[in-house]
Length: 249
Image 1 (cartoon, helix red, strand yellow):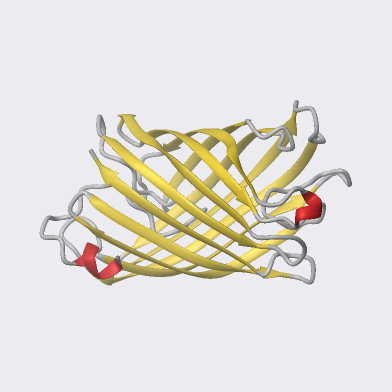
Image 2 (tube, rainbow, N blue to C red; image 1 turned 90 degrees about the vertical axis):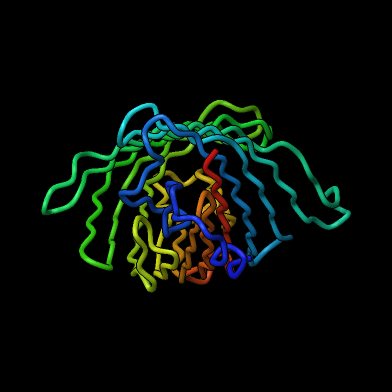
């Protein structure tokens, strides 16, 4: 798939990003709409694997602002004694992001995520975030910190945690508008603030962190970013893999 994207003949026009969780300064052009699809695989140390698929539009009503609405499905692999494999609608995600004007020191990022749970074992979640991104030559670096509050479903427990996301990437191949190939490294995680919290990165009721490599390709109206993140600590999942595909409409 990576090779196929690189062989497309048009110059990249989509609002791609080189990370799977963190955000950089690139946004969808003003007035444009992009279709995004996220594919997740989580391998926890206890229990079966989790698979999630997200799909929906990303729209830019104004320069530097994006509104993304995604629907997600989840498949959980469980032993028969726990009900066997379960596939169902999981959640709706509404994500608003604003990138401030570029300065010599970088750009401010402000983001607000609202996750509406469909699975009754998942809490609704409101998560404001703030960050800073800096690009210099072939390199880009970003860091975000946020606060997540979970609330309001029958079987889920309310929670509070601090979130962090950071990444650095380099343009391996430079393009006229967007680099056809970027590689990088990324770290992200959740820090529990209440003992009853249950995070959604597959590690139960403890804080969790991940770190791992990313790669991104773009050509024409299509871009693809993929990352493999490894859990840090004895209670973290073994790995988390996410691939994001974007198509400018």
